[in-house]
Length: 353
View 1: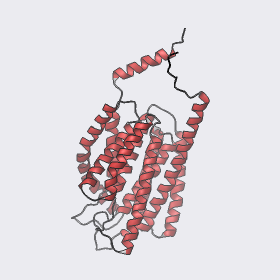
View 2: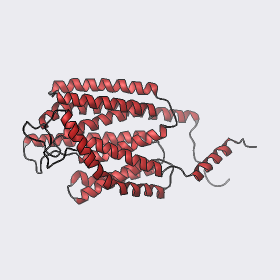
View 3: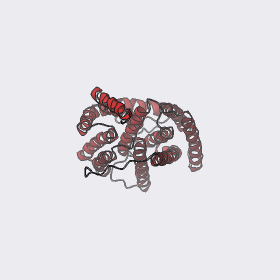
């Protein structure tokens, strides 16, 4: 007797039951991501895009084309559902990437022909749900556990977490305070759409993160939410600082699920913070060029020369991929740790005498 109670362990049946429940939860979450993404995309294209488009010869301003940003984020949300339902394998990621290219092309074409109206939005939503279901079924069918699964899961979860943080930056082109009743209605709608996207991206990230070190993952996620709160309620330097800190903490929250010490996680936070500001500036210029190209391809009036036409979703996606690469690299096990784990595994396999 040592006076110390042994920690309870899950038996084979309990572990299998828990794994089945987790799989069902992820599938339900994936379906929700796909359906919500399809509905938001359709509404943004057929209802809000026509309202926001300037009438030639007028030009656009900053954030005039926010419906395009919302639509592209909705596409990324639906594709996060594809990765979820495909067990975060490399094949599911490739299926999601191919679907993203086709969906984006269809979005530009439909924007160019100026689809509009609520009936059109309903048909577009139905078609998008069908396309998501077909892509998810294909991803589920070809999914196979492989050596790249951990990498895909980490990258997809980090991107989803970063998108959840950055979605709050989308705004309308109107200066505060907004008094026009139609503009107030649009502002309220945008706030609702952003809230839904933020919650769903955060849920997708949670579904992609391995169920390890739950407490510290939740702790970093809570800190990220607290840091992002000023960005959602204020428009000053505190909001900008909170946004930067929130993005970093969102990436660290995903990295916290890996088997690394707290000091190494702090190193991840420092590295992400160092690259974040210059990364923002670089992606601002690249994203503005991409946004101008998308506006031209869609046949919409350009944004005036004094403002920018930032492809927000594109810039946020690239930034998320960059932070995922940094956090993955800095949380890789050291060679000594790998040797210790291999030795421990060999000892566990030696039968007791």
